[in-house]
Amino acid sequence: MIVMKFGGSSCANATRLRQVADLVVSARNLRPAVVLSAMGKTTNALFAAAVAAERGDADAALRLAGEPLANAAEAAAELLSGPHLATCKSALQQMQDELQVLLRGVALLRELTPRTRDAIVAHGERFSTTLLAALLRQRGLPTRHVDARTFLRTDDRFGAATPLRAEIAQLARELVAPLLTGGEIVVTQGYVGGTREGHTTTLGRGGSDWSATLLGEAIGAEEVQIWTDVEGVLTADPRFVPAALPIATMSPAEAAELAAFGAKVLHPATIQPAVEARIPVTVRHTQRPEGNFTTIDPRITGHSRGSVAALACRGPVTVLTMTSTRMLNASGYLARLFGAFGQLGISVDLIATAEVSVSCTVEPDAPVEALAAALAGHARVEVATDRTIVVAVGEGLRRLPRLLERACRALGDLTPELVSFGGNERNLSFVVPSADAQQAMQQLHAEFFETAALRDGSAVVASSEIGS
Image (cartoon, rainbow, N blue to C red):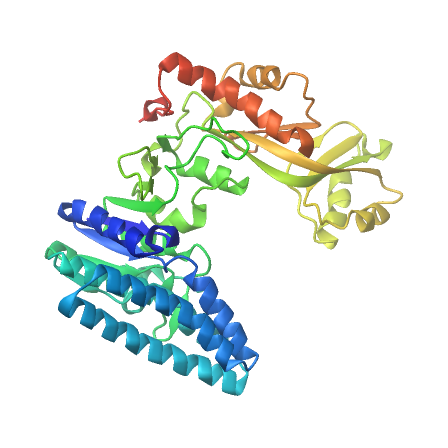
């Protein structure tokens, strides 16, 4: 069994839904469970409708909610015919009636509770799954439309519900797995769950990926496929590095490190269930199914890939340098110094120390003036704003000979203001002026990827670079 998750861009309209159906049909022998996001910008429209209703503007709320409903109805008319169209239109009409009742109730009371908001916005995924299930049935495939609220059990933190994984596992084994083993294709919603009392919940932004890996864990899937609008994870952000290359395979730890530094990669929290169950997660392009893709494989953790996996950058950040001769051989000085950070709620990212100074990076909105005042008499604080962290990520980087030499040589005339190996073996970070960040990314990418690609005659970072 596999799980196939399709994001909003993958099911934005009738053409895209037809492509999704094609992919599901091609994978039918793998017994797929299909997890769908809402179509296009549906969720945003429903949030806006809920806000309008809270203001008491029922007409605006119904108009805003009517746009995704009209899109769904238009897609149904283009995709379906005969009894399949009639059944789908009836289901959509029923959901439309329910949605209008919710919005009118909110507008009447001018009160929008988190529970009601979840009930409103969950309609987006309900629309899209109704369409796809009907389309697959029209193609003659045995398909079961399963409401995620029946098995994706959560607590009642509406808007950001926490999945109850033990209960999900039991319910999915009872309600989903038998359908798949019996040869049916299961279509269900991402992002949406339900409490024990039957109330609708949502998992928060990015929740559809989480839904897919939770279901994959529960049914013991062989693979969780995340279908989106990119050919996997790239070696760098293509906006900074047009020559960025797709990565064939990476470890969950590498993916987490990249996500922490702002790369467009699956958030580690959303794929954790699959990681713990040792299920590979692949990132694929819906419109280029035969193209490159990335496998985030939990079975390869702890090995050195023998190279940098990818580059990322995050900025702007602010660099603080605190200098004091009192620091020399003074036990507890750093504790007192950073105690001021804690009192002011300032989080530290990178840090480097010397005998009489400490440098660190903080977020650009950190209250540095208040910090300087709090440290008066303890240290002189120098502030450098508009800086960017450029990071090289890969398993076992500290064990690579000449890595730092190669990176510094690649930077050439660019002078980093702070250099740090992470507390693990997976990242080497440089802090540079934001104006130099793109050049730094391009020069590092040329050193670690483009030369190797030319030498190997391949545009893909091979999975064989990681130990098995």
